[in-house]
Length: 110
Ligand SMILES: [Zn+2]
Image (cartoon, rainbow, N blue to C red; front, side, top):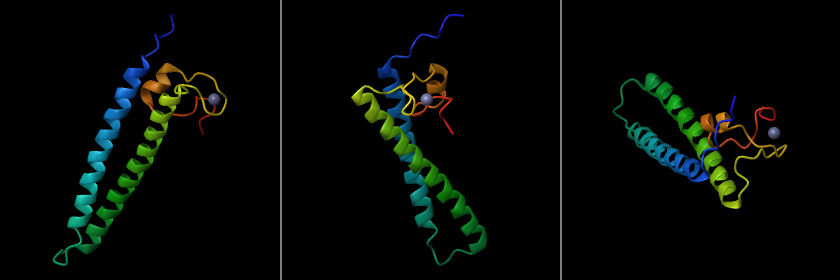
């Protein structure tokens, strides 16, 4: 079987920027939603708080991913993108397709 042709780095970069923009919008929406709950008229506080925890967890996951994406963009800039940060091997294209920002190859990933 032929190896999958390498995806051009510019395409990876575009995908990362797109994802970054999506996450930014989502986080903004979450903050707005959370802010709107600081409302004394709110009736069902317990349910509300539960919802807020979910929102906050989503927000935190989003922030973590943003950090990963920024790091990946920095690696693109310095030319080390696509190489495993631990063992230095090339990260498989299929893995990069699934996780654009991953800094580790499959054998090094936790
Ligand atoms: Zn590795």
